[in-house]
View 1 (spheres, rainbow, N blue to C red):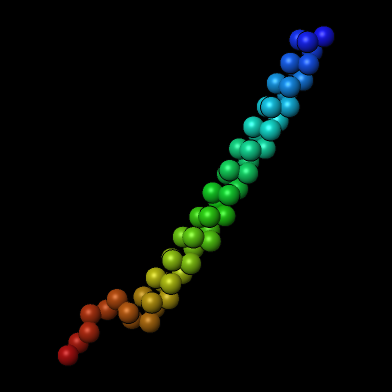
View 2 (spheres, rainbow, N blue to C red; view 1 turned 180 degrees about the vertical axis):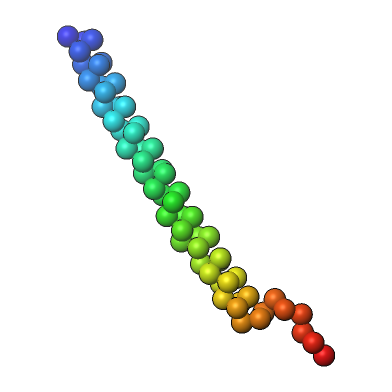
Length: 57
C-alpha cells in the first residue's frame, strides 16, 4: 500500500516539475521580450533619427 502511494507522489511531483519548468521557460521568454525588446526598439529608433551620428560643425 505504501509503495503505491509513493509512486503516485512521484508521478505528481514529476508533473509539477514539468509544469514548473514550463513556467520558468515562459517567464524567461516574457522577461526577454518585454525587457530586451524595448531597449532594442529604442536603439533602432534613435539610430534612424541620427542620434548616433557624429555632429558636423
